[in-house]
Image (tube, rainbow, N blue to C red; front, side, top):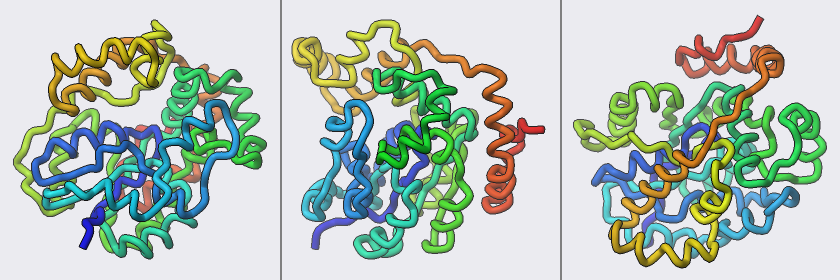
Length: 304
């Protein structure tokens, strides 16, 4: 019988799912499929993006069939096997039935970030990749129209920063759901990863290298370098043999690319008036999410 994933990192997008997956992957008892965000579950649910710049590139990495999905885990020898698709949480009404049908009752890991920071990080991510041409304020105003036109999740700046309904649905539909915070992953990474090892029923006393941030958002200092680190450019083809000689393992190359990418990024600044408006907009959802999860979200409560 083919191996299936027995745990899922379901999102939320731009909350640190890439970093979390890379950190967990260091544990010898964990296998996470090599393909980043296979999005099989949302592909079955039919949630393909239909608009937005570079949409064809986004669609290209979806794994659309069960056989293709199982192949991602064919070499899984570890005790636990999982994957991280950051859109699974957001489309919960469609994805939960798909998970139950194909995977049963896997362990679910959810990572949440300050909603205002998450929304602006998503915007910064798209500016970084030259997929967003509007100001943040204009992009917020355009969000509902873009959603109607089927633009990808990452353009749903405000909507994807409201967590209560989707987290509640996952907690009600699966036996084991673990919610962690991006801030905790950054401030106390060893404690946070060990709590996840305990959740997954594997050895806890293991130190993880959490010094590298993956998929950092912001404005590239050098666009050519950024594009070459993210896409299949001529420069990437030229450098690849040397990179493989210096970093023989894929994990080492991934870490090196992430480190170089982060050093090539300048952080963007959110205007204060927009920040205040957004915290007030998210107030009710923050309070409900705090009560639902039992987590301390006091650092998110910057509303009046």
